[in-house]
View 1 (tube, rainbow, N blue to C red):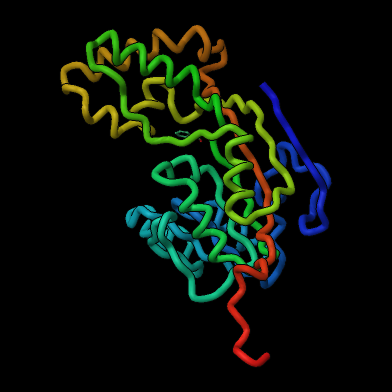
View 2 (tube, protein in one colour; view 1 turned 90 degrees about the vertical axis):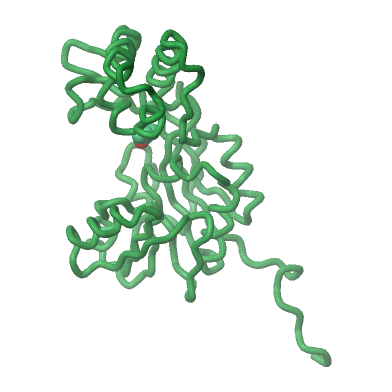
Length: 264
Ligand code: BEZ
């Protein structure tokens, strides 16, 4: 599955960003003020800072922020919910790497907060799981849950199609400059127990609902179910599908601008 729409705009320093690191698509400039939304432990925040931008990492998880501060002394971090955060100043860009798919409560609210944080012309650049992301992993989970009489697992992710996310961005006051939807099979180098390790790490909430005596047999079944699609001779591969975009905040319309004082 591959779907890509790409346009070039001089607001971005790229010609073809397909497969390039997200920081190159963001193209931070020295002195720019940039938010890393859903910064986790600050890896992407540090990459942005290395380009000379002033960056603020925001994450909803206080433990992540504590770790980000410990790992990146000298960088700025704040605890904040992407659905509700506000800023006192306007930023040149908001970037988000592998985090927007966790912000599943109200994607339009997240886009609205990003819009409010940006100056007109400011950039919103991100990468998240797109429609079809982890389809084999999720199918294995759902089948195993059913086999063990557990109903449907509650999945905490939002994996939009390019058409859906484009519509949300445009309705939210952005002009899209680049939108790519592409497979990115990814080796599970940190999970020797394959799909089971992936579920332990990323679906811990769903797993917490499972009676303790069923957890290990359930995970073993997930591995059996997922192996034909995801286990190679060289190891396990996660069936990631990425949605990557770059958008620009539109100028305020006359209707949205504050009214001029009477008499002018
Ligand atoms: C990802 O696509 O990066 C991802 C999705 C769900 C859980 C963990 C990672």
